[in-house]
Length: 112
Length: 167
Image 1 (cartoon, rainbow over the protein chains, first blue to last red):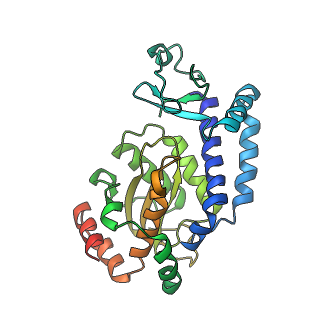
Image 2 (image 1 turned 120 degrees about the vertical axis):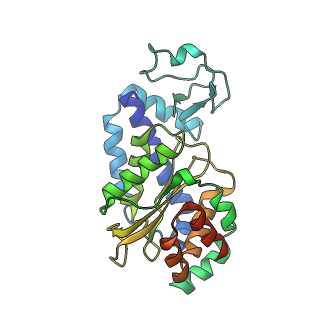
Image 3 (image 1 turned 90 degrees about the vertical axis):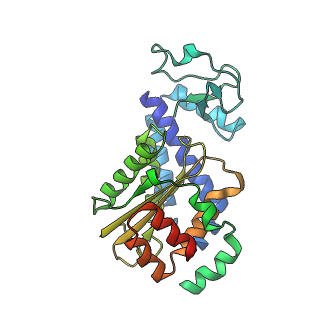
C-alpha cells in the first residue's frame, strides 16, 4: 500500500478512537476500560500528522469537515462513501500505488 | 468488582451471547498462543485475523490495536483481555478468540498473566453499536470463574462456544 495512504488510514483510525472515547468513554469505562493514555494518543496523532504530505493532509482535513470518514474502503468496485462506481482503471498497476480520490464525492479511496 | 459489573451491565448489555458468537468462526479460534509477551501475542492474533478472514492489511489493524492498548490495557477481566477497535478494514464486527495456557503479560491491572483473549474489530459505523454491546456481554460472561476454567479446558471451537452458551 502507498505509505501516505497507509498513514491516512492510521490517522483516521486514531481519530475514530479519540472520537469514541469522547462519545462513548463513560460507557466503556463502566465496562472497566480505562483511557488514561488519551493525551499520549493525541500526541501520537500529531506526530503522525506531521509525517503526512501536506497536500494529502489538507485534503483529509477538508473532507473531515464534510464527512465522518475522509478515507473510505472500495467494495465491489463501489466507493462506500457515495456508492459511485469506481472505474477499473483505478486499480490498474499504474494507479495501485497512488493516493486516489473518488471522482464523485472526492473521498480518499482505500482497498482493504 | 462483580457487583460493579452487574450493576453496569444491566444497562449496557443487550446482546445475547449466541448473537455475539455469530461474529466469530472456527477460523478465528487460536487454541494456543505461542507468544508470552504483549507485542508478540498481538502480532500473532492479528496474523490469525488475516488468516481467518479476507482482511489483507495487517499493519493498520496491528497499529490500531497497539494505539488502543496505549490508551489503557484492555486486560480488564480476571485473566481475560478484550483488545478492540474500529477500522475501515472490516465490513462487519469480527471477533477472534485466543487462549494461552502459559499466560501473556498483557499489562493487566492485577499484574497477573492473561490467558483468554477476545479481539473485537468493528467498522467505523456498526448499527446499534454492536461491538460495545458485544464487549459488555463477553465481559459479563467471563466474570464466572467456573466458566473461565471450562473455556481454558475447551479443546476446540465448538466446545468453547458450547460452554459460553450454556453458562
